[in-house]
Amino acid sequence: MKHQKLSSRRRKNRFRKREDSLNDGPVNNVNVENGVSGRNGSGNDTGGGNDDDDVTEELINRLLGFYPTWPEIEGWLLEVAQSFSSFVKLESIGKTFEGRDLYVLKVDVERPVMWLDGGVHAREWISVSSVLYIVAQVCFKIHAQPSNLAVIQWHIMPAVNADGYAYTFTKTSARLWRKNRGRQDGLRYSAKHNMWCQGADINRNFDFMWSNSTPHSGDLTSIDPCEETFKGPHAASENETMALQSYWLRHADVIGGYVTLHSFGQQIMNRWSYAFINDTDYYKTRPAIKGAAEEIRMFNGEEYAYGAVSEILYSFTGGSGDWIRFNLNLTHVFDIELRDKGRYGFVLPLKFVHPVAEEAWLIFQVLTSNILKNINLESRKYYKTVQKQVARVKCFAADFNETLLQTTDFSSVSIATNFPSIATTLTNAKMLLTMLIILNLFFP
Ligand SMILES: [Zn+2]
Image (tube, rainbow, N blue to C red; front, side, top):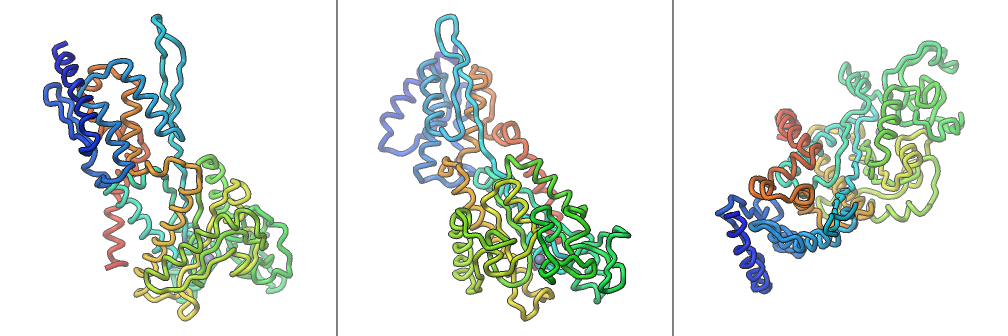
């Protein structure tokens, strides 16, 4: 009770102060008496200063440092629901004896998954090293600034074709191996070559238009097990293909974007692969690929072409991008061909590893930000602060009793309690220190 009285007095001061301070900028409130620290979150966040931050600071400041009355709570909840209407729903599930609403605040943060992979084709080493570089960048950026990137889940597969990749390291003659190392005896006999052959092209094996490829598609989608674009004995015959298809289906409701890295050719591409169809998505995603190409040009002068796969590369069936585009009805699906334009081709000297990784990271950021802009997360302007904001909202609405307000360190609650997957990501980031040490070998 003593605290409540103190706080009540303070609350009045706070509200007066808030009104007074409308022209003075944010108030940094700390209530020493009841142990509630008015941490305003500026410590590890954006540095503040913009309108979005001010909105957040205002809402937070009004929570901390005093015990709000019921009308204040109700008003606050309504305001939060209004301010973050794209992912916060305030619902009354009944009335109290005295007629007050029983509010449940439903915080439904859409957290789209960005898929990124590399190494689909064994010899395209630069795609693998670039994905690893992006992993490091993403993890450490989240680590350093959790509120900035944590609205996205990142699902990253650095080397899809692990068998093939490993094989290319075994001997000089294997360096240019493209397929996986799959073997299904009885199914991979080539009459043309009169021999059994190993491996299938994973990027021809996906169950989309698979049967539509014809012998005349020749080198680009082959039915001959000894050709390097062999599409496999049947659709999704390969372990990698099956694993990916089933993984993507399991995450179909959250995957928001897809980027696959290949080499070489310096191309940033949207859909489709099987044929050139300038549908709505083609135009919708064109600014992203164009933007990425322009970004690279400004960054280091490198030229990346942009367009649909079938438009600027060639047409082929059974590709991963088309599969996920079709089966998940996903708009933002991109294939990237990294450097170079043919001088070194697949055997890009080590000196290119770092600069190409930087380009890949840049491309990935442009595509990701474009995806976020278009993925119906209207609250994007709140991204920088949404994490701690939501945490406070949830804690507050779940149990706005005295104990919670007195003892909860909101900033620590925010990640661990409400964003367990982010907490896991942060833990993983620590584990990735090890990876960084290894990466340092590549990027001294
Ligand atoms: Zn490739």
